[in-house]
Picture 1 (cartoon, rainbow, N blue to C red):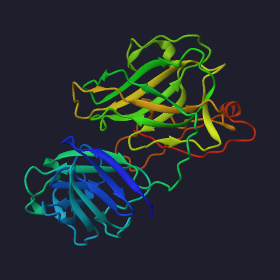
Picture 2: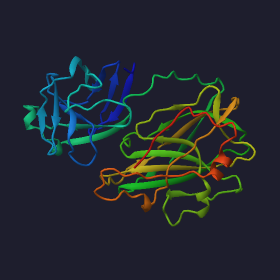
Picture 3: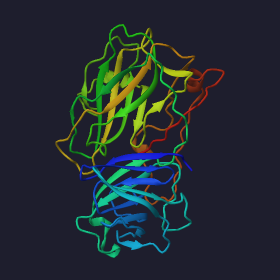
Length: 362
């Protein structure tokens, strides 16, 4: 069992909350009464394997919802309420449940991304049978509930920070937007090692910022034109396609990333471009308009170079219509191949040591 789990979210009422576990999770609902369920794909009232219903008297029940969104009391009660208390932010609940309950109506808590779906009831809860999740005001947070219990390396004394952020972008009122923004390092920026990075997400936009990446541009070009706009815009300069070297990558649900004490990601100095490209993927299924964003990534770097230069290797297939999964398929295998010309160029004869990985898909 993990020794500590903690996740924050912003609900539809703009109040905050957490999900924690020591090893039992704590749910700060922010408002009462509430209903939470996990997991379920966003956008439709899919069956939910674990529903927690709370009345104003802090009464917790294990329930489940069907395809129509109707909530039913679970015949096997696996959640145990340990503590309930009022806080300035709302109502805090401490409860526990085994990761696996052998209950077909319960979600098995395991590795990987989990959709935490929470809903707000407009009226006091009278009976579970009166709730239909399809009519609730809901929110969604993608989290990784189980993570390895790895100690956080200490940052060096000379560590400095740099923020690569979107410039107060007006998020388009469409479902999918990739925003590209060009920035640059200071003149004469010497070789440094990135030792840690973390996301900066504009408050209130937590559900809209899907992923972010910082790319370094190709050193063969002396300059890159300034640009800040949709990555698929016809106005985007062609040269920006040469900004593909990954310095940092973050996706919804991830926290800060630390490099091992003996390694860092090099940037700056001779043979390194001063120009960087920030890419932010906005996922806006409700097509919200008028929202501004200055999200980005904060880099922690040091001039004291470490023993090893780290790198980021992207594996997979590019986003093209060829990748489409045919309809009505229950399983579909898509294969990608890395040729020997690529591996001979990118990998040293002694090989590489992989110390971290991140999976991402759409």
